[in-house]
Length: 234
Image (tube, rainbow, N blue to C red; front, side):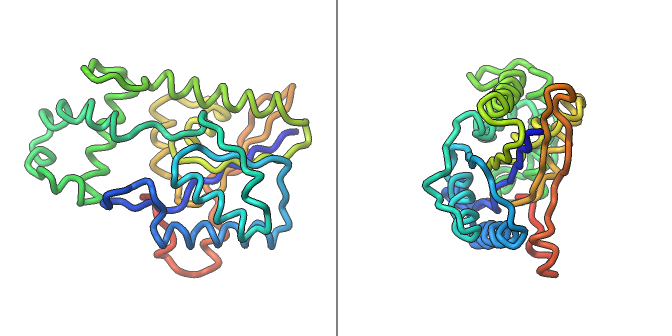
């Protein structure tokens, strides 16, 4: 069977001018992941990452600590995360209209992690329901189709016993895992909120069995450090 390992990127720089850059914590998380893979003597037949800065940085740091040449990583645009900023801006006006507390937060909404998460969850609900909006954005159905097609491309290009690594983001992983489980769109989004920075998920594919989930949100590389601050979601 083909094994696809899905690694979420390390913690990004929430609240900074450039969110799409790993924070020092995110760099540390990815280094721990790479060391863990080396200790496990796990090797991959191919390594991919999405095109975003945080995805590519995560792949590079992980490979360096794994003892793998990062130049062998293939950037695959299909594993790009959904554009949260565009989706947020498209649906936020309607969300604020329905929620006085979020509306009163003003610009503080972007600095408070809890308020931002509440707003983001409401925006995501509007997105997957395909509510009308005036902005041109990638629709939920298009995003899901992009990820499932990328999975099909991987298994068609690689041998049945290959191990493939993909450094990507929480939304991509949630859709891939949800596809393997056959869950609803709402459950895919719920999975998205659970994916920990640098966590490991694994999907197996067989011609007869199709896609199967073999592991979700593994963080052994973080837990063995006995430091709760390493467990981050944003």
